[in-house]
Image 1: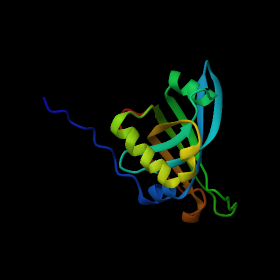
Image 2: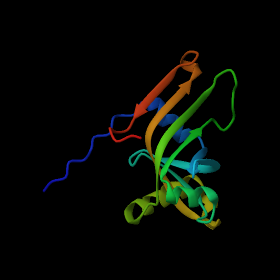
Image 3: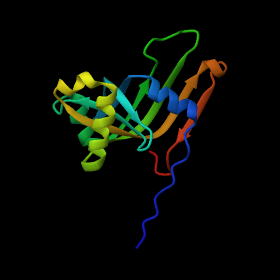
Image 4: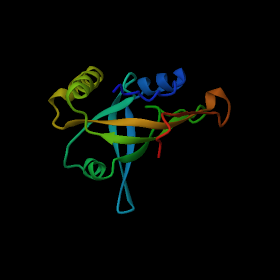
Length: 153
């Protein structure tokens, strides 16, 4: 039987460019209705639509995400210009990459952050489901939205 891959809607190039251009994300997780967030350096894999980051297994955000893989977060520019606000809010699924995806994720992450090779931790990924991109350079309050699939939460 042939599996039919779900078609993912095309993401606006301005969102893709923003994701590639920046370095820090905030991941928000929840355990027993208690929220927790952490900041992590990330790299974006356009082909797999993943935010890739490195963190230790014993951190609160990883421990919580392994038990509740529904996450959300934000990405803002590395230096903020208050007159030209930009930023992304996202919902996603936390995943522990394996085999081919892990090999690719490591390659992408260490290409962007070669210094991280010597830092302990594991490579993790966030599979984007929805994005709201605010970009006041396009007009005050202008937002671009993207939904990855019908199976969003």
